[in-house]
Image (cartoon, rainbow, N blue to C red; front, side, top):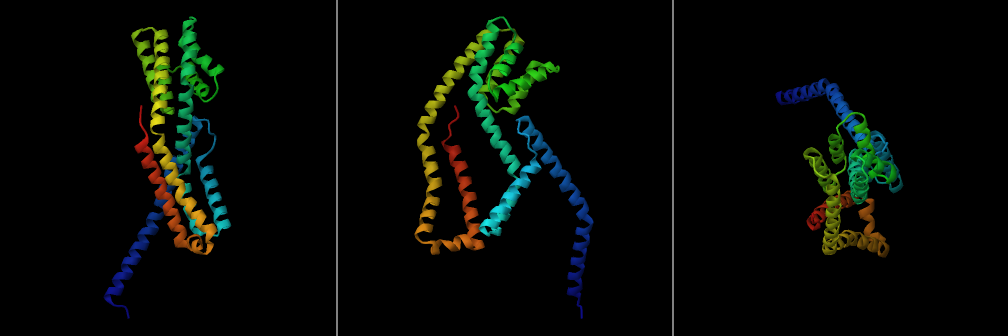
Length: 280
């Protein structure tokens, strides 16, 4: 016989299920639209950096890798962990590729400024100097200045096209150079002297950065040692006494603990790296 509390519980369960069934289509539609928007934005950002991959394909590839590793290791914990992480893989790939491309462009920037300065010294305009960078230098700096040149030829102001490059390439040196060029063009200054001073400034900054890296090299070495040492000890114990380490690899709780250790170690590496990094 159903009592009052039982009927109240059934009513609550029925109300919850009815609400979920009513809201489920809207929730699915919202999630699908939001994911398509995020995936589309990430795909467009990857295209800007000449990485012609779709975010959805990257996620599917990461899930496939997780499934394969799960089958090989017979660990559903590892497979589920990689599947959960796979949804963040496109943004991680984009962030890493942005940093790599920005550092590569910054390393080539001084040569590009020298080439543009020589073009100005020869009586050519700055647009021709940018074209020389696009044709004579190697990627990625040639590709970035090529995008600037294409935008300028399509009617965009040169200042706006240069500022758009600073949105793609995160480099304080590049921002300083483009800011100086824009100010000189607006005020009517001597661009040749500006490029000569920019090249000299970049050279001095590179010397200071090398000195700073030499001073902070001990901290980076300690980070690398502390990151690798625990896993070396783990591997040593495994080869010396596999029976002692097998529970950590075979049981779900042990696998989840190892995944948690990897996550926390990654957080520690990021935090300590920011501590020892000195901005010049």
